Length: 311
Image (cartoon, rainbow, N blue to C red):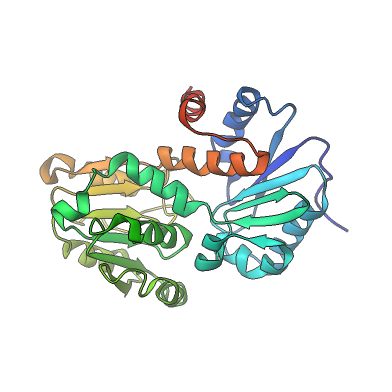
């Protein structure tokens, strides 16, 4: 017997860990009104990280078979959900196949569809704060702490051939467990001959500190671990030293953002530009809402939804 209740209104699901704490639960009803999505609603589905594959399959099968369940945004569980449910989909987009993750579920013309939107949404967020020609002019490196879907998506975005010489000379992915690191290496190695990838096993924050200390100025440091939102703490210690004149990105926008506080403490001394995950949140959700409800969200419409979310 399915534990999920049949939808009585057009419904988008948020598959995460602590979905009830997310701003989207208050924001989406206002977005639905602005986009004239009639009586569309959002519902959260929470799983612990790395849950039983059967639990993911039950949720995805329910969405597939329920007529008014139109799709979902997936966070935290993107890789696990792909591995456990990929056979349930009629269509899987190229990014999802390349990255082995699903961040968006939708339906179109009778087909049950899976997408990886993070290379698009993370790219849009990065373009909002990384200066034009930054890598070509400064030669900095990228440190991505965490080897999950967000880091894979950013790596794919950074190394696109269309950027020519404006790509990071090195991307370092540091993770505290080996299996995800090995999977990241399998997916990312050889993406672009102009970018060197380094995969570092760092089980402790102290080891991340040492990796951080080796970065040149004008680098980008990203917390893509989930710490601060899905769990307490930071991937770094309070003794860490950020590289000078660098960009620091906390991709979370809510929670106890210890990593962001650590960077703020060195902002003036190191001349850091620090960004949180709000813009990423907006692009991440609008990309999925656009796909699930088949409505374009860009330009003035995107700006309007961003303003709605802030208020």
